[in-house]
Length: 112
Length: 115
Image (cartoon, rainbow over the protein chains, first blue to last red):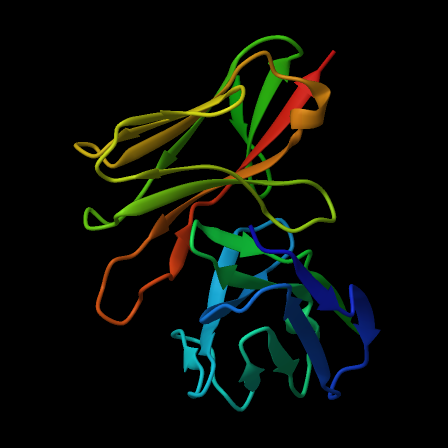
């Protein structure tokens, strides 16, 4: 298994500002993913982040809005830029481990 | 029984009864399926998985059934306990050249266990 931590666990932000979310995993993994979960809904993949290459974004998500870093095999960041109330969601980091895919605890973001 | 709430279908189950949660998946080429449990305020927690070359897999109190003919997945929970109250998501791994590892999630089912 993989143990994943995220920082911050929650935040309340003003519109127009940016927030960077950190994801740390306790073992080296090739593939990391960032998901968004809007209130009461399912999970939607934002992007796939592989170490040493640019993140691959899903339809509807762009790098200018959600820049991602992947500096090494145990760490990634997701930035939510120029936030609006519509960005209020849970943001989840996930990793592809040898046996399956695991999720972090999530970052609960509220934009006022 | 099942009912559709504001966002998620809800399954109400009496403590001690068996639960069956259903999921229809979309891609006939998907090779791997996972069930996750998400408790309030937490991230999804892995429950059980199954590969497309199997039709049944059992864990501790849980069984996953896969019917590839109708693209249907189910999760059975035996002797449901109050701690089983959560939202349950199925996920399929899409098998395309550029999507290795990418999961597509179902809508989720809220399970409420009543005493």
